[in-house]
Image 1: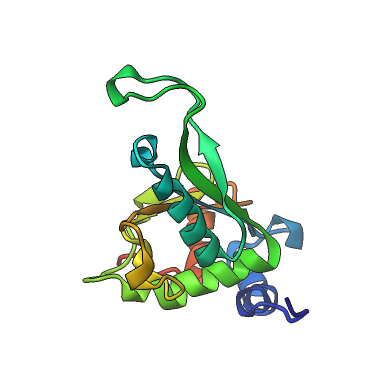
Image 2 (image 1 turned 90 degrees about the vertical axis):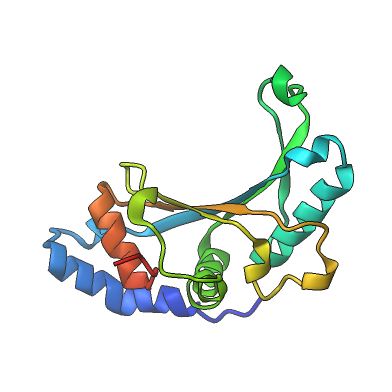
Length: 183
């Protein structure tokens, strides 16, 4: 990795922070919301039957994020799904710092425009505490994934954790980053 500053971080420091500071009338620069981390996860329920799918999900998520994915285990048993506590059923990656900004840049400017019939992201993904979650139905929208080498098309969940206190502050922050919300 080089020591260069990611494009989105540079934009945040140089333009977004002063704009939000002026627009919202904060008393301190420390009150301006920031993106703390991005959590990318993928549920692989079929991994109970086929362990190869879980390894494929780990490699896909590692390719997409640029960081090794960790397998997650079921917290409790659910008889209807033939699921036992401790079974590996998903993968997750938590991104911070440089990798987080580079992933967000690729998500906003490269991957989301490649979604078929894309009209924007619904703003209903806010949780009431300034965090935003969105689901992507196909991992193949990322250019890092080779369409011919995937085991199966899978969806992923992306959660953007911000330091914003309210959803409106977080929405404004993500708008300034260029997140394509539906009008």
